[in-house]
Image (cartoon, rainbow, N blue to C red; front, side):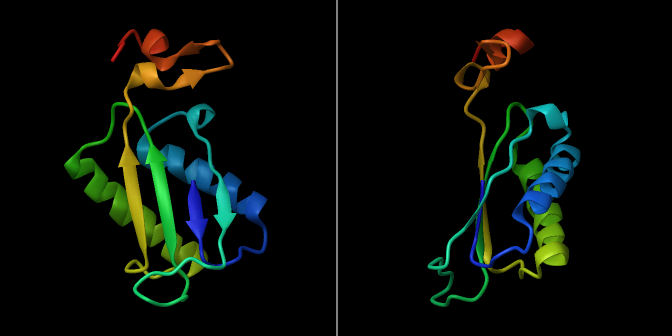
Length: 119
């Protein structure tokens, strides 16, 4: 989920574009990518209301210190190009809850069962 302190002209188009980009960056099928954009006029960062963001990334099996460094760089550069956000105006939180802790309702199971890795 991306929470931003700037309104986007077409949030649906942005979400679709970010979905494709996110799949590419994380090396995941887009079928497993979910994007939600939420505008928040009261988000502050560094004591100002200048455009800022928080981004939460939930991903299974591909998060580590080195990868998260690269993801942070790539994503912040992309957000800068697309939205004009400065790379010193936001946080990205990386979360890997484990395969058994994300359900895939389409198949009525968890990714632990799908990937054969129950953790």
